[in-house]
Length: 447
Ligand SMILES: *[C@@H]1O[C@H](CO)[C@@H](O)[C@H](O)[C@H]1NC(C)=O
Image (cartoon, rainbow, N blue to C red; front, side):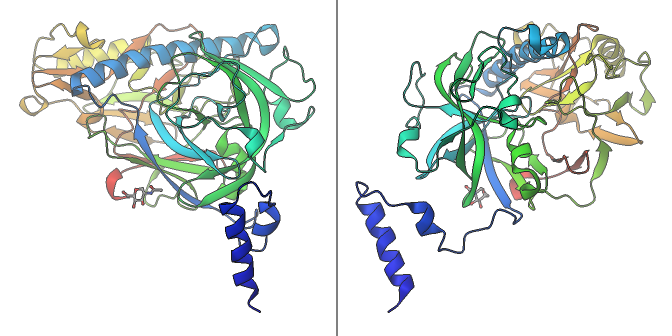
């Protein structure tokens, strides 16, 4: 008797007659599935959140507007962390982003589009029964139909990591997050099997099962995948299974919206011949990926930026974070103004009013008709990030070229942000095991 044929037959019955409750766990354990200690290799194709119907100038304008909203969320989040979580009514999260990935939860898996967010930790999706759910393009996950769903018990370290002091833990672990713009989500923290990429299943991932979700920020997605540095993020939970690292290569904002940007976990996230800088970890805001910027050089000349401008202070103020969810770079004013001045004196043209773009420094020209200065961000250890002109200036329309960076008032507590236009066409590796960030120019569509 051929046992494998019999097993296949039983599985077939289970899938064709869903009324019969088969324990898929026990059945599947007979298959040579990847064991939990094995290192995984996952590739995910991310799509840029975009309004396909919009022209490129309109797309850029709405990305700039979203950057401003995101900066406010980062500010609200940072302020709360700096003030101390305990006085807070509801923990604030950043919870937004510019890229989407497909992910599935449960057994059988239910897939949805999730916002990928390097600025927050929690993974969550909308869940039945809905007290309040917004419309999402795919069916809402129903935990009662999944054989692998279990609630996180009180006292579990990942429940404590929520920092939800106000909701308590009765009778099991619940979460409630606000997103700085009034959006919020709340529900149970639960363990589930997550399917990511083409055929990678990871069991026992804690995620927020949101029964009450309000806000416009989440449209286009059924939830979120947090890729911050905190305990609840996907990368922290995958841990050594994914060698504590992920990498991505972001296509240019002006590329066709049907092209995808690869995101790699584990073995796939590797770079040879890359430059590497140390990351900085903040005990006040453990979620953020702080990068050790030391200065900015324009056409080979170091800008006159007051010492300490970029320092991450011990109270959690300042510093610079790298973020995939903010489109443009925000620099502390004491760094932004000398940079703007130096750019203006290097470009032999009079700036034009570009206020319709939401940006600050614009020229009535095309990038091919002007010699643009070379900008380098300097990082600790002599690591130079040379920005190609396309990562500094965006061609909004044929005759409108704008600096894709803005200043932000200094001393208000929140960090400078290294945005995604500055990261485009680079393969960037976030390595939690070595506490480093590596980067290398790359053709993202051929990785
Ligand atoms: C991702 O994109 C690559 C290249 O276009 C393709 O070969 C691969 O099959 C895609 N993977 C998934 C999971 O869609």
